Length: 187
Ligand code: GAR
Image 1 (spheres, rainbow, N blue to C red):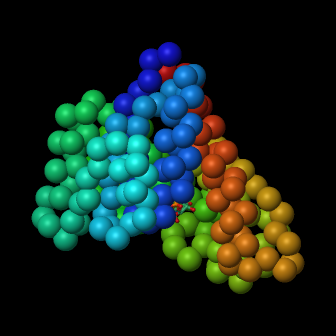
Image 2 (cartoon, helix red, strand yellow):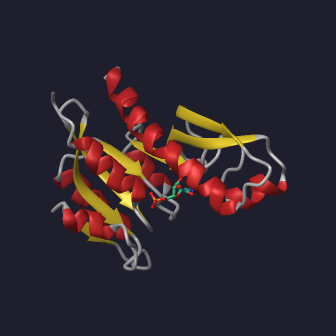
Image 3 (cartoon, rainbow, N blue to C red):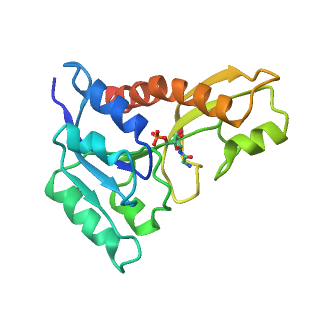
């Protein structure tokens, strides 16, 4: 199986990164994680890149043209898929244009519901019956690109923010790999 060079963007804990690195070890899983990009020097997730000897880049997003630096790295490594796995910085239109249909994102809600931040608090406030996660292509509008995979669960009346987060993330570890397989199935 030809494995596609993939870059994973993170900002925090990196549990999706860890899951995707593990999946990529399976011989029939279609990606190889070639690079990790992180915008937060304190992100715990960087340790998964270190542990697995995957090159990583910590980007200072306050520097002008920081995206050009990222684009150069991606081109240099012939990256064919970018996975946003808890990357909390908005990506510019120019960047999205440069990697059209090659960027996918995981979001902790059933899009188009609850785009943006603080999803779990808003889901509880709206007394939703069910929630879940979505993997979608990234386009110029926030959390609005074509949906690839969605997984859902029913909310228990006692669930708090942490419960929702844990239940959602459990589904994310299934949804993200499934979405990646789907992206490459028809290419
Ligand atoms: C994930 O739950 C993901 O859905 C969310 O950040 C978390 C990262 O967790 N993404 C967003 O909220 C994007 N708007 P992780 O660092 O443990 O993978």
